[in-house]
Image (tube, rainbow, N blue to C red; front, side, top):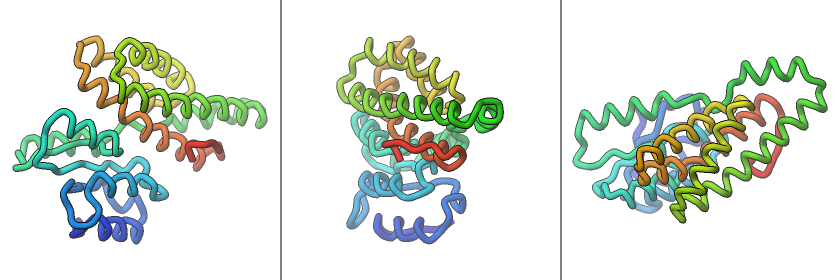
Length: 215
């Protein structure tokens, strides 16, 4: 385990190591220099760090504060003083995330389709991702439940058929939260979609050469 005393130091440390050198990042929100939110935003812009779990440590534990963390690209939140049971639960939830794409399914599809047809299909898929990225960001801010429900339903089906398992599962979780009338959880999950889209686009680019605005 490596430690850093500031946001700038944490970024420098991450840039020195390959992204698979870390299972996750615990990030205090109150640090000298860059705060935790801005540090997380910059981590997400580092090549290869789109999907590495980032967990907030904060004395503030209100729903609004948590939502702000998720919008910055964090995967979890641990309140201070730290409760050991909560710590292990959040670590378990965040360090074993859903795979963003079903690479085996897409590889089989790539082998069966002509090259130009597969490329066109992937471009259409990425265009859908870019639309979801924009729409979910807006709905997470506005809190329009019915529109969020419809968009989640659309994404669950389309992403699932395209092998985008992370986005499909996220949509299913949003729909479940809305069904249970847990609007706060639904908005939290919706606010994570843009980061998940970026991670998905990065994986499609790395493995299948897909290009798009989310790169």
